[in-house]
Structure formats: C-alpha cells, structure tokens
Length: 418
Image 1: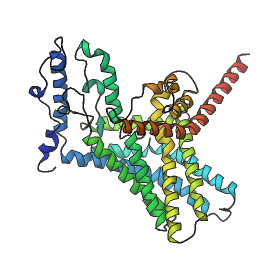
Image 2: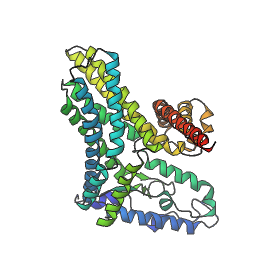
Image 3: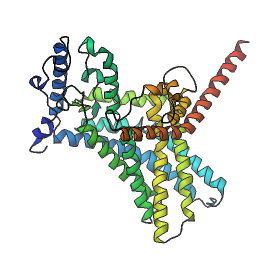
Image 4: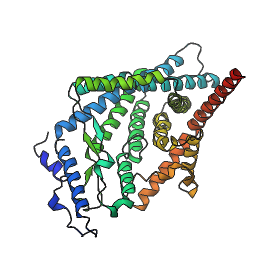
C-alpha cells in the first residue's frame, strides 16, 4: 500500500491507556465495562490495521467488478437493448402514445426480471471468482460486537447507541442519504454526458451506464472503507470502524455462498420477486417515458443541454424506486399487515410534517446523520419524504397484487373444501 500506511490506521487505533479513567464519565464502578469497551475497540482496530492500500485496492476491485457485471446485463443490455430494438422496428411510431407506453412497459418489465435473475446468477459467480483471484469483500461490523453491553448503567441507552451504529453503516448504502446522492449523481452525470454530446443508440448508453456504475461503486467502497463511528466515550479518539475487509474464504466456502445466492432464483414466483419486478418496472417505465420527451428538443446547444438534463433525471428515475424500497424494506417487513409496505411509504411522506409516522415501524428508524446539525437532519427528513413519494406507487401496486393473489387462493381453497 502507501509508505505511510501506519498513518492511515493510527488515527483509528485505540489503547487502554487512552481510555478515560474510571468515574470520569460515569460513576458506580463502570470501569470494568469501560475496559470491555476498550478491548472491543482494540480488537476491531487490530483487524482494521491489516487494511492497507492492498486491501483498499482489493475491495475496490471486488465491488466495482461485481457492480459492472450486474449493470452491464440488467441496466445496460437488457433494458436498453429492448428499448433500442423497439425503436428501430419498422412498425414503431414514436409519435403514437400507445407505442411509446408499450415500449416503456416492456423495457421496465425486462429491467425488473433481469435485475432479479442477474443478481442471483452472474453476480454471485463473479464475486466468487473475484475472491478466489484475491479480491476481497468489505463487510459491515456487527453493532453488538462494536458496542458490547458493559454496565447496567448503560443498559437504557445501549439499544439506541446500537441503532445509531447500524444507521451509520447504512449512510452510504442504497437508500441512505449519501448513498442515494452517489448513485443519482453518478448515473445521472454519465447519461447527461452521453445525451448532451449527441450520442445515441445501444452502446453509447451502455457505456454511460457502466461509467456511472463504476463511479458509484468506487465512491461507495472508498467511504465505507474509511468510515468510523464515534461512540461518544472518548470524543473521537476511539472511533470504531463500521466496515472491515472480510477474511479470505476457502474455495468450498465461497462456492457455497454463491450457490446459496443462486438458489434464490428458484423463488422467482415469491412475493419478494414480484416486489422487485414491480419496483424496477415502475422506475423503467417512468424513465423511458421521460427519455422519449427529448424528441421535441431541437439540435442547437440549448437543446443538447435539455437532452442531457432529461437523460440525467431519467437515469435517476430508473434507480429511485429501488433505492426507496431498499430503505423501507426492514420496517415494512414487520407484522402481518398486507398493506404495511404502502403504509410505511405513506407515513414516510408525512414524517417531516406530522407525528403520524409514529403509527408504523418507520418511527424506529434513526436519522442517517446521528449527531449532525439541525440543517443536516432536516435534509435527511426531506430525503425520507421524497423516498416515500417514490415508493408509494410500486408499493401500492405490489401490495394490491399480492392481496388479490391471497384472496384468490383463499377462494380457491374454500371452493375445493365445499
């Protein structure tokens, strides 16, 4: 890695003598718990110290290659290929709204189906081969490992602190405040450049997709690699790394992991699969309809900017419903309410304006910016509100479809019983 590798990790290293003396921050003999916390931080930092420039490059390669393979097939060749094939068909009329909508629907369905299948076939195999070639996964540290129970005095605040740690680890994920910014900016900027420079057709759009994907993967991996969580015990001197490089797996372990992931293709008819299909279909339809509007632009410099601007937002719309669904899935998966997904998205829309969002498990979601300024928290609330608006349509469609299926299955069973 770099020559001064120790400098990068020294700021994260913690020693017991650096910890505050017993009673400095708490009373009633909590020193044993503090020592336990110190040992945990030292153990995590011992793992972190092994992460030099070599591990940095290996995690960069792992995430980027896997993301590129997925994007090449589902966002690139599948969705874009279907659109370009329909556009070039001799019977296609770009001025016929019915033709345009059918093209949007077909490209959206193709995107949803290919996303589900590719991420459960080609991507696991590429990840397995990458690990065997020396690339490394970046895995999230456990909140229980990072923040152990250390005293009865801490028991009340322990769960809240662990939730803050978990939310901190999601900051750069799809659905997180910064993770969405990375994704939208990367995909949008790449498609903006393709459209504004006048290129069109399958391969320019595919290249733009790959460029945006690579940019997002590199940003995501870099910031996760460097990310830490300040537990507040020593004001920055014992920051806990939120992610560490996974230990190398044997050939059999890696292949079993890939097989387990590929086995999920067998549940293509599951509710989860239909939700994924609908989410991507909605994003694909809206993006295609928006992209089709560029035919009304002219050919001058101003029109080129308009085309790039439209392409930017079309790229954002492709991924927005998926990002929003990823964010709300944990809360929406609790309970037996068949419309809980829709309610979760709806109350997220109301969250910045009313306390009504406390009616659903979304209320347990801590902000992505713990300890941040009031302005940053306001941005986070607005971000969740927009995510709720993006998720309402696909959640409504999926919830209604699944509810109808369940009712039809119930009627069918009753018919056979009687």
